[in-house]
Amino acid sequence: MQPNQQKYWFPAKRYGWGWGLPCAWQGWVVMVVWLGLGVGGAILFGPHLEIYIPYVLILAGALFAILWIKGERPHWRWGGD
Image (cartoon, rainbow, N blue to C red; front, side):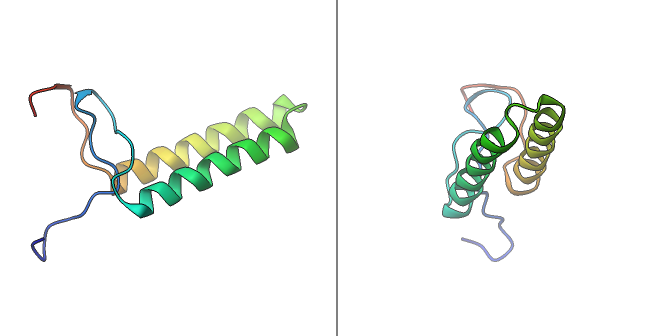
C-alpha cells in the first residue's frame, strides 16, 4: 500500500448506491457496536417510542457519518466498477 493511499473500512457496493459489508476489522467493530447499541436501546427504550425513535435516528446518523468518513465514496454503480 502506498503511503498516501487511504485504506477504507467500508467498500462501495458493486450494484446500486451505498456501502457494502466492512472490509477491515475497524469496520466490523463499528458494526458490532452499532448493533449492540441498537439492541440495547430497544431493550431500554422500546416501550417509550418518544425516546426510542430519536435514539435510533441519532444512531443512524452516527453510522452514516462514519460510513461517509471511513468508506469509499459512493456513487451509482452498475456492476462494472
